[in-house]
Image 1 (cartoon, one colour):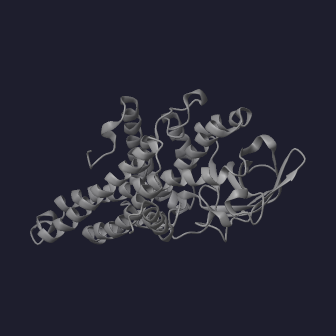
Image 2 (cartoon, one colour):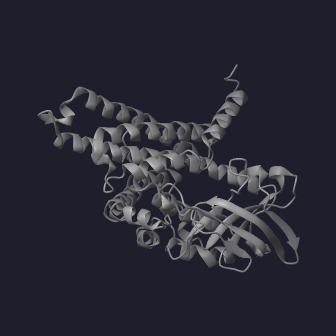
Image 3 (spheres, one colour):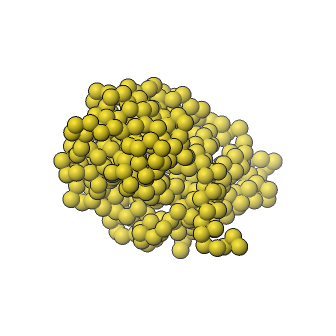
Length: 388
């Protein structure tokens, strides 16, 4: 398998979609990402512009107006988008994820209510799992769903939610039987524009505000029976399955950031003079880029392996955790090295090094912290007997 790209095995339609995504990242995201950061906001106008290209409907089934592409295509597109900006890529893919989940799992009338506007970029979606005291420990959520006539009353607070700053619809997880851990968790479709929702201001982060991280409180919100997405007993497992996909595309996004930083540094090294010759003529400088290129190639292979498992419907728990663990570490290490290779020029806003460094730090927390990934990998070793 080609270590430089995941696209060699894709269909012509998928190749064309990836090429559209690449042009969009270059022509739209790159020039606007610094503005979104300065204004501390989601690039909603770019999400709307991405929709006609199919970028909000990658995995959505064709019968719902989507493209029906496999997960591996989405992973490659997130890599392309993150090369321009991690926060925007994460915001975009989360809206796409909600559209896909509703199209595949919601009742037809509920899907019809939201999916067309999600894939058109008119509304934004989010997945509300984390809480102030429950992040990686999903089974510890305390938001409650209580049976009422015709539906469920939902009360609680969600935090650290991508797109929460502007999201219109959420896939939200709540506990129906306090004390039952994962067994009592159910999934609901929540319209964040209805009564019973109080949105918090977007979180002020160190950077990457295009991710739209925030939270909201539900107080007496009522979800109707047809807005139950997954009943207790199924939601917990379904959510964990989705996390394996998220870990894989987060690893791909780290590869995208490093790949773009490597491209910029290599070009800079050919034209920047130092001691009478280009930087690239200095052995030590070249070695720094060679190290980054080698680690990047290895992480791309791990992403490809995990994506292939997901496409085939195989268990990706361990390989997804391994891909994210190593890609996030690689990104933090190599982005620093590539920024150093740029010298002071790398500090300029028109280069992405600062934004990418914050993106790599965020990648260490989303969809399972590094510590949780190590536990997941260790558990897999014990199950397989490989630890013996």
